[in-house]
Image 1: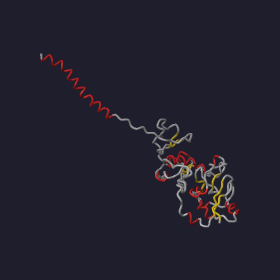
Image 2: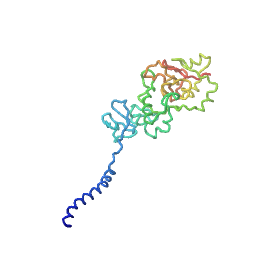
Image 3: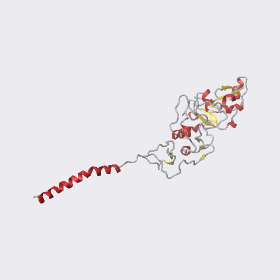
Image 4: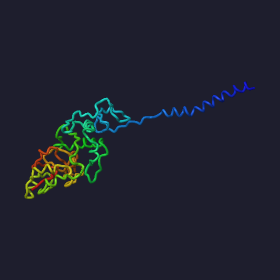
Length: 274
């Protein structure tokens, strides 16, 4: 009797042992399974042929990954191809963004303090990529007025001068005795001051040639940007053509080129008279 019962019980014992081990096997298998977090990139959309992603790579629109929107990492990261690093300006939008993203050139701590436009009405940049995209695009303000750019290197990522909106404590004493006046459309500072029975003071133009000063006396509702022109510092009038950034304030990067006699039909100058 005993010998016939054991064979019958053997399958049950094996089956019970198998299922007793099954949760451990399943747990072991599930522990080893894991899906890597998908890598997604933000990318520029302006160019027809080139694209820059937020990792600092530039690629053709055909080679970008259609799902992740990332460029291949085989190329040069933070490339400054076609850029003049002394001016921080490039001849293409995508390479301007790529070059700008280099942490050694653009500090995140500085960017996060910057206002996107007028300090009173606008927020700060959320990240370096937003800053680089906006700065390289908006540098179209660097024109010699009308429809002509000052040079082929008109995509610039230079941080706006004093664009945080904080006061420059050193400007007060330098403006003692100066009557700061806003000219009419198309009027030079020489003419503005002369109408007040005063003279334009060329040595004080550099004190006014700062975003914080422009934003103090003018609306600057479209932002504050570097430009090249004999009429700076100035604000573009609202009625100006759209390519001139109506409402934007303009400052000159090179103080030595500032002059009292400059004027332009689409700007109003900020003038130091005495």
